[in-house]
Image 1: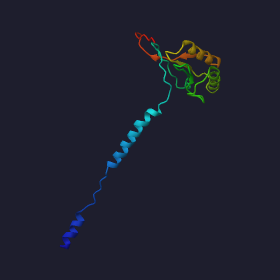
Image 2 (image 1 turned 180 degrees about the vertical axis):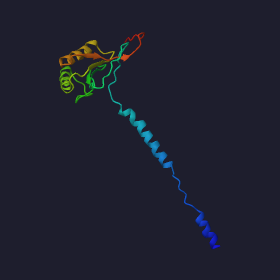
Image 3 (image 1 turned 90 degrees about the vertical axis):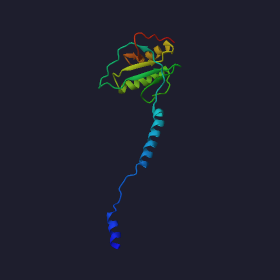
Image 4 (image 1 turned 30 degrees about the horizontal axis):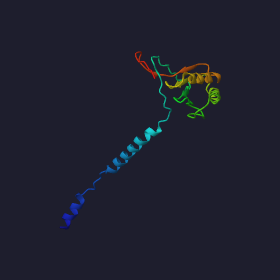
Length: 153
């Protein structure tokens, strides 16, 4: 009888299985965290750009990131880079900030993103400020559109 019991102990092998339930719980928790935080990480200024049937500009690999001046619907002026990035600026402050950026990035492209419902004069003020700061060429950004679309406020 003792020999039978010893024989049974030898036949039993340890079961080596991985319990994946805690792993699945952790993965679902991470998924939920990323789903909640992803929309919070997006930043920027909401601007309703006009649409135009224009050819997109070609990007060059050796060109620095373009400087973008945004004119919001309520007429605020914002920059996309530098220490004043995302801070509303007045025209004289904008001139100084762009001049500082152009010292670091000579020849950088400068674009103005104007909301389609903002006063045209405010967009022109932004363009004049850019040129006064030393920006020779200033471009306007639009949303791509088809030739049949007519945007009216």
